Length: 145
Image (cartoon, rainbow, N blue to C red; front, side, top):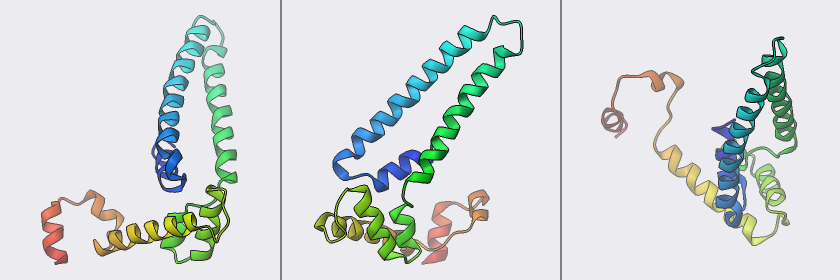
């Protein structure tokens, strides 16, 4: 979640809110760490298994909350455009920006995302095995050119 949430916010949030939402996300992470420390400090002296069950239970509760939130959010517009589902992407962008599908801001975001996807695709396709490859980036560039 710590990698996916900022990515989703960065590609789905309206421009005017992106920075604020990413900062808020980081503040929530720091606050969560502080609360976890307080809970651990409060339960460390318990002689029973509650000393570890309470902190784990609280983490599970937040995990369920996050999972429920993920079910409510629309699919990533970038992913939808990448799969060729433009109408669904436009609806998702409109929903995330609280706008109509005909709104100029929706068309602007679609154009930006299509541009970014086009640039990514020009770099060529890579598989999962390339993550573990010993080849350097310069070798990959030479082989594609």
